[in-house]
Amino acid sequence: MTAGPATLDAPSSRRRAGAGLRGMETADVDRDERLALMRTGELGSVHSWELVTAVDGPGTRLTVFLSGCPLRCLYCHNPDTLAMKDGEPVLAEDLLARVARYRGIFAATGGGITLSGGEVLMQPAFAARVLRGAKELGVHTTLDTSGFLGANATDAMLDDTDLVLLDIKAGDEETYRRVTGRSLAPTLRFGRHLAERGVRVWVRFVLVPGLTDDPRQVGLVADHAAAIEAVRPGTVERVEVLPFHQMARDKWAELGRTYELADTPPPTAAATEAVREVFRSRGLTTY
Ligand code: SF4
Image (cartoon, rainbow, N blue to C red; front, side, top):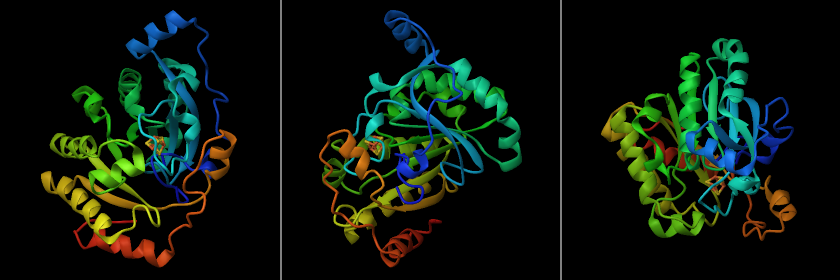
């Protein structure tokens, strides 16, 4: 779930190039069986996966894009992941078999698995099973989430989560609703909960000219990140300010959807750096 070279909680179309379910087993089950297996978390609805380096967490990572998302971000870079029904059925055990095959790469690079989307917390049972299995393999685990469904993350799931990439998409309710169609409060609650439980967080903020770049707005997002850090110092390891880009425009067009940001330019390097400076002024480390 990400936009600059590596941004938001929607992976960029650049990063998705070549992604797919190639090499991932898919489950051949009927509808009733599929629903039963999804309830237990044995089966997930997966859009695609790819191996990435230096994005979606530390080291080389297997990033798995789950299907389904309750948000409708104006800048979504994965509009094709929003419906869970459009994903492919993948067994947790098959995904974990792939994770096991990459253990050497993960160990050599300090990488691991990142569950992204769409929204990973729309499939909490599947996510919990994969996270547990990854930890049993000794693999570093990351969740890439908007936090809107943070209440779906059980304590057991968070015990198996080494890092959360938490998107704070706007600083106040009005702007957050304009950007995503939903409420900001659950994300902030989830951020505080992560800090209380000692889960490390990388906050991500997508800088969109005319949408999220108002100085008051940026200041509020920085305040929210600082408030999470204040719950337990050391929680917010970094803030990633992600410059909006237009890589998803064609994807929106292919889906026949109106892309409101079609004429929005990316922020300048100076504007992006100025926003990073706002976060630094709160004592946070930014990239
Ligand atoms: S709509 Fe969902 S998948 Fe798209 S950017 Fe927003 S949270 Fe991410």
